Amino acid sequence: MKEFLRSRGIELFGAIPLSSCKITRGYLLERAGLGMDSTVVMMLLPYRSEHTPKNLSVYASAPDYHAFVSELREDIKAYLGERFEGEKFELFGDHSPIDEVNGACLAGLGFIGDNGLLINEEYSSFVFLCELITSIRPEALGLEMVRDVSIKRCIGCGACMRACPSRCMDKSDPRPKSECLSAITQKKGELTPEEIALMLDNGSIWGCDICQSVCPYTKGAKLTPIDFFKNNVITALTSELIENMSDEELSRRAFGWRGRKTLLRNIYLYEGKTPQE
Image (cartoon, rainbow, N blue to C red; front, side, top):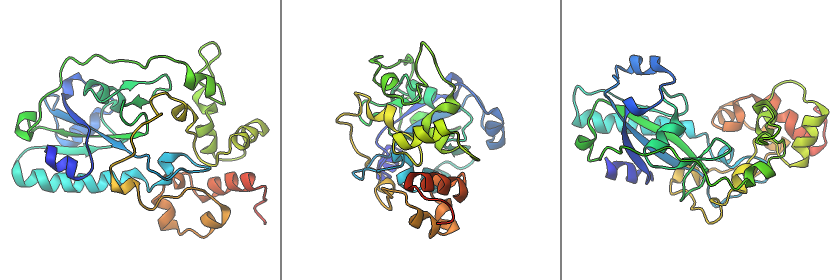
């Protein structure tokens, strides 16, 4: 299993008991026929490449990672299906039956930052998470079960809290997550003058990486070894690009999930245009 994952560029992973995880969507386990005695193989998918986006988050500059997870799911099913007849296994990513950040911490893959993100010492917080949950025991997969890992938090330097433009992490006067700049760029309908100013002042059309970029663990962090996140990278969003992008291509991008209308609203504001121009 180690060789299989590394052949896909996945270098960091760890096996933990499902019983140690926080279950968030138990029905997904039932649907897959997986019991609480199952094994969870947590995986990190670093996504930051050498291409630096200008007005969108790094996570949205490459094609949507859900496509990578879908391909990996089919490959894993084929690989394990040939070797473990009658066993149960399913790969999850994002829409998961467990708290993925908590699971990654239990697997020894990182710790929780003040911004709530998983921070890995090699790749900082620029990582996606996914996990294989299976009835197969870890030793049969060539893995050792990780046990007794305590959940750690970051060093608490306060860099992310001080840099957050919407003060969402200000412990003395915390703002709701809906006021996070990333959430504002994904909000449908009309934006308030204050929301528009926040977006334009920080040069963001989609998402926000400020709390991640100022983290001391990001300085010197490694770039992704996974080819999927190195190719077809978009470093800047423009009205011309989005107006001419096909619906199929837009659906392959993380910034397309809210629809073209919301995205173009942000771009027109950024470019100082009106929809008629």
